[in-house]
Amino acid sequence: MLQLVLGLESLSEFEKVRQVFEQLPQYSIKTNNEAGEILIRKGPESDRTHFIHVMESKGQRMKDSLKFRDVLRSNSQIRSEYCKLKYLLASKYPDDRESYTVHKTGFIEQVLKTSTRC
Image (cartoon, rainbow, N blue to C red; front, side):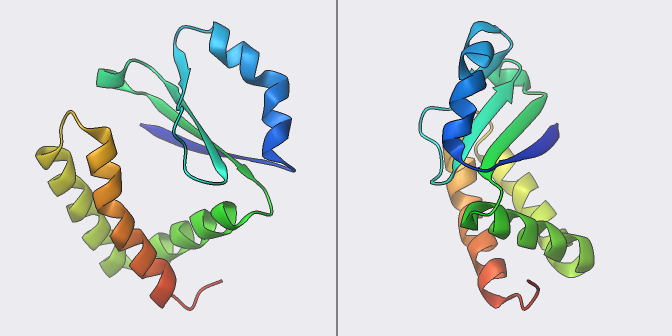
C-alpha cells in the first residue's frame, strides 16, 4: 500500500479539488478524519492501494507525521517494534480499520513524546 502526504497552506484549499475526488469511483474521502488531516483512500475497503494524507504543511499534524517518519528511518528497534505491532493489529482486526488505527495511536504518541528528533 502506498502512503502519500500532501501539504497545503490550509486545509480549506482542498475544497478546490474535493469534487474531483468525489466523482471518481475508485476514491473515497474519510468522513471522520483526524484533526488537521483529510484522508483520501484509493481502492475498495478490502483492497486499498493508496492513502493520501492531506495536511497543512506547517501544521502540527504534518510536523508529527514527519517526525515519526524520521524516527522510523533512523531507529531500527522502534521500526521493528512498530512493524510487529502493525502485524499483530492487522491479524487481530482484519476487518476493523478503526480499531487497528486506534490501537497503534498509543505507540505513535509515545514515540513522538520520547523522541528528541525534531
